[in-house]
Length: 356
Image (cartoon, rainbow, N blue to C red):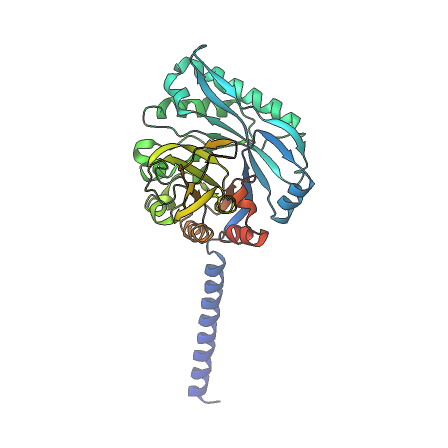
């Protein structure tokens, strides 16, 4: 073997070593790419908890591991000058054996406007005790997570955050405390503040003024929603995602807002002979009629706002690229809605899988 041959052989071996090192580095850099550990979830917002065999099978088919369930509301009682629990969950049947139940308590912003700060510790204790009583009736032992739902404002921020701290003090050390986060509370977080909780649930819906006659869809508008989220990836709380799978009817006389008819889908109105289609998602009552126990006069107009599947999918894909956490609960609102039941399990699973 000549000197040149030895030199070329050493050079070749050196190149092979460098390539091997580069391959190893590339492999580990790829394996370190951001991966999401997703949990399929639903909200359950009915006043009676009633999961039968069919619904239990539906939860199992969709691999729903958590049901965020509203246990009760807290409002301000002007007579007693104290907060009051209303709409307390009635438990009829619970066959959701494979799904974890996460208690949710909705507190009106007015409650914190009216409350004295000295009343906060007692409110925190009372809420915790009531949650435990309801949860025991669910035949569930531990409470891994509790969620507080409140659309706080600048005026109530400090007292609401104080409540969250006091409420967290009441909880078992292993119980996660989460809070709902509206879109504006992410965009203007410097002013609205960051709630002192473990996780936030970003509500990607209710984006436009539903009372305005010209509003196209008050529930979900991707182009409107994404404008709020330029700071989403840097939000200091890990954010779970809440997406809408519901619908409602907005009732007008002329262009004057009258009220909301919950859980009405476009198909339900189309199949009702009492309505004619005006344009887009607007329909006119041709006679006096009841719709979901709401009396509608002749010539009243109803706009059907509902989650559009393609808009929902587009929203999920956008949000999945802007997450600030690797562990995420994807929560659909809500399990009992007629709109959610119009979609096949495969369609709903596709939404969940946008976050894989």
